Length: 89
Image (cartoon, rainbow, N blue to C red; front, side, top):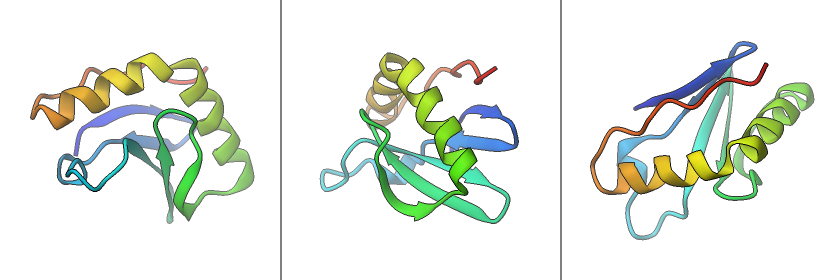
């Protein structure tokens, strides 16, 4: 599972096995025992839960890096390793 970014204790990943034809573009955000799945684009929560503050960090980061997230998704569906994405600062 490629780790795209990490900031404020939040780990952003895209899982290789999640890219089948029935799965919409998405990424995972993990914070402690919490995990949520976010859409690409839009960063809507598709599943799971993060605390409010961390969810807002992820949403802001995803908005800033929407193009990179789209490229990362395109890479993994082609079986390639996506590039790292800068953290939220």
